[in-house]
Image 1: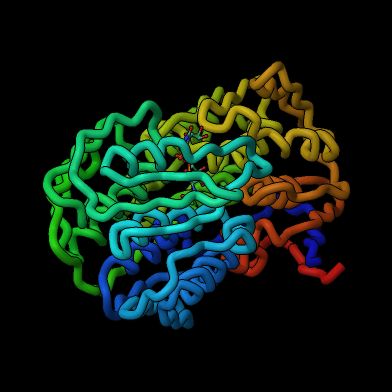
Image 2: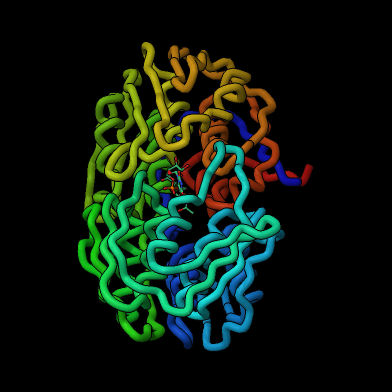
Length: 417
Ligand code: UD1
């Protein structure tokens, strides 16, 4: 299992590039199941999660070519309707094939996704929405078995804002008979990206960027080519790294509109920001100011940047509190950061962060994707060396993170332990 050996060094400077958004590409790949023929996605980085999804699509009968930042998916012959346990247990986003398989084949069996390091993650909203569209759902031996002779449009009110449930329901509703309206739909840029792709394929969805979406069912969808949006979470991770540096760092190939709340929080922490159309330069403060964080559905502060922001706050001149309303137990990184001599105390589900002048290198363990990124950032600013083990988590969602960060002055070595 690979691990990172990181030599602490705060002199990051220069330009760093953001890749395509994993969380937009995963549903895009599932969307391709709805349009028989060959679709092409561009700006696709090399990530373990995307390889896992490609594997699943191949199991279903699709032909997938994934190389050089491009993925083509030929879904002419979808012959199998089951997402097996071995694949779903590796990657929860496999649940995204449920809606498309049901809409296209009238039947799907998807292994029930379990919990994960960031807490229990139910799929009840996905299932009740599909039921509202007329599907019959049975849970059998750890599998979700969904069937529908014909999906029929309906009004669906989500009890909670869910990216996954919104996207899964959209993918089913586009081929349903009649009109579907989704209320309290998620507004994340990855939802917008899915709507763009579906509409390019011939779907009729309106309401992008709002919590109410209207879908007029169509008979069929057609394959297309699409450039994928850039990864706002990777961008945010690099901006936070820049905020802890001593010199300016420019993060390129991003969409600043997707990062408003993070930019507000970075300014409050004392950063100066030069925001251009596709890049942001962060000029770090001499003294990091404490800022409180509450994660919320988009456009609120993203839960996927909570761990990284906690690292920044661990070096602030004062105390801050951090609460995650999306995944209240997502604080596995706190104990690891305290091993680096951060001073963070959990009070039920709130992290009380007392800033310290310095972190000190130690051995730590990555527990999930974003927590791993946080530990890498912490190792980069800690005095001495930090070893981050189990970094396979980070390869799920960051393309060659050590190469990118080394290009702006980090000292990270990948080692096969
Ligand atoms: C997606 C992202 C993940 C991000 C999360 C929140 C992908 C592949 N993953 O996950 O990185 O952290 O959005 O922005 O895009 N919930 C239910 N019932 C459901 C579904 C969700 O109660 O059926 C709850 C969840 O437990 C959570 C909240 O709703 O508290 C939001 O989760 P959701 O937006 O669905 O997250 P994912 O789509 O799984």
